[in-house]
Image 1: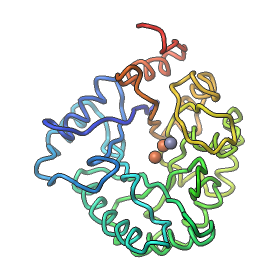
Image 2: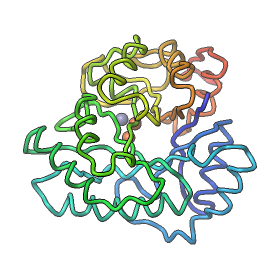
Image 3: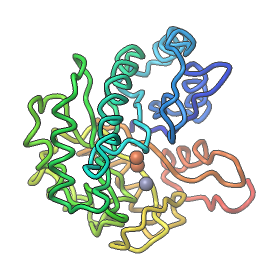
Length: 287
Ligand code: FE
Ligand code: FE
Ligand code: ZN
């Protein structure tokens, strides 16, 4: 099982600290933002302790493809109402991909965005032109994330992502990140994960699936809300999430937890252990 979580990247150890955090959870994968997710301020690469991070990855036998970058969520490539927003998306994504390449990572997760006051089809067209305007470095793959369909979000049907990828000038640079909370909120029944994978394969192609975000959901299937819950504390449930984590058809794909902190503490060490042992432990009770 390739399993990890969202980790922080902060002073003084930056990227090396991110790897250490992942190792403390006994993870063999990790995902991080290269700075604050809600803004575009970024540190110079020289300060990020990239060499030390790569050395730690190597010493622990974790391939660099298992270090995943998440683009900040303020990036909205679907916004055609304010041209400066999609312009910022193009600009920032270009620099973010250069950072991803410099770090030595391969996959960068991107939310397709929200169409705001226009409509779904316009949103999809806007995303296509934004992404086709990017100069993507060799070896970098942008993974479009499946979304819950909250507000005017694009990407709550596999068909949306398939349409975007079908229109890419360089489709080899694009893939998908499947978020279990988001697709459940979007109306897919994840308790029948084989059928979900069949549907994904039919619409997008399973060879495009590179990352799974493994989260429980606070809301019912189809609620289109996007509120993550700890494993076994939501409507998806531990058994289904554990089944997905160990599913043979996705064994080669990193699973990343983005579940909420409990009492200000990251739950990931315990959640990863629960998945490895296939035994549910009530996280809301004291250790
Ligand atoms: Fe995301
Ligand atoms: Fe996610
Ligand atoms: Zn989410």
